[in-house]
Image (cartoon, rainbow, N blue to C red; front, side, top):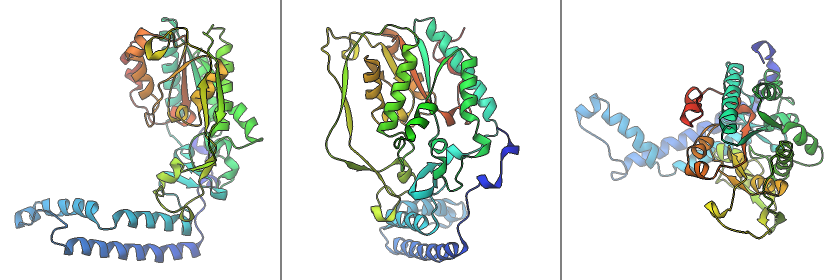
Amino acid sequence: MSKKDFSAADLPTPAPSRYAAVAGVTFSCVMLVGLWQIVAAAWNPGQLDFPRTWLDFREGRTTSTLEKQLEQKLPARTTLIATANSLRYLLTGGGGDQVRVGRGGWLFLADELRFDTDGNANLNTRAKLFGGASQGLDRQGVKLVIALVPDKARLYSGRLISGHYPAYNLSRYEDALAAIRKQHVTVVDLLAPLTAAASQGQVYYSSDTHWNQHGAQVSADAVALGVRKLGVELEKTTFVTAATGQKTERTGDLIRLMGLGDTPSALRPPSDAEILMVTKQTSVEASSGLFGDAAVPVALTGTSYSLRGNFHGFLQQALSAKVLNTAKDGGGLLQATTAYLTNDAFRSAKPKILVWEVPERFLYSKLEDESKWLKSVGFSP
């Protein structure tokens, strides 16, 4: 992964000039509507509340407060923003700063296509962190398993406007597997099974960052296989997964990131639809303890992927073992794992296996608190 691998073909294709012209006219109209809203807000004496003295104006209190008031109190601010976002998408195919619109209405997270200048160094730092965590857990009788989640854009590169995954990130997944294994940490390759399954059916949502239920089940099966190879005996608990209800539409997180979560379906990219799958325990409990469990043989930590597509349920079924899910939405790489390892839930009832689900892109992004993390969770030598 280097800058020399970067090519112009990896850049987003600019909108045709005729679309740009139409977009310019449209956004001018939107700006005029916005101006009208500002006038409407200012005209209403009770609408705005801001410092009006000459001293306030001279020292900037009037303008700064007025700016905030206008932002909060425009009569049709929400509708105006949603309209602008819809027009941007319909006329230019644009998805905003965080989303890239692909072919056939598919959406992708812009972070998956970003080049991280210090990516390799960041990867090595985090691989060593996993190594330290594995050693610290092993001293307490817990085996660490990393479940490495591949980018949606990698799996569905043909749906990108460019038609291919950026060359500068091409080796990123394999490099991550190698770096983690170098630290003698068990890591499950999810790219291979997901790639194979994608030829038979969709494994990620088209309007969402995450795997769908099919992809979650394939990944859970692969993780379960990796866990079984460790030879750790787990208390058996049986589960069954079944479909519930009718097919329903779900608004993907990428649609919401575009600011189109509440707009009519005709004015935004198509949503996904699915029949919800639910996993239930079928075996009878012998006794009850912490969290209603006699023992929690497996704990799952990580990101929102562990909270989507019934991954947790599929993992329990594939393992025939109870799994405590401690993953968090929007917590980055470390937050959920930190919270679990420093909580009484871990101290008083340690699992035999800790599955840490990690998205590929997280390993290369800017470092956070990695340098202090091992000490913060009590794993310093």
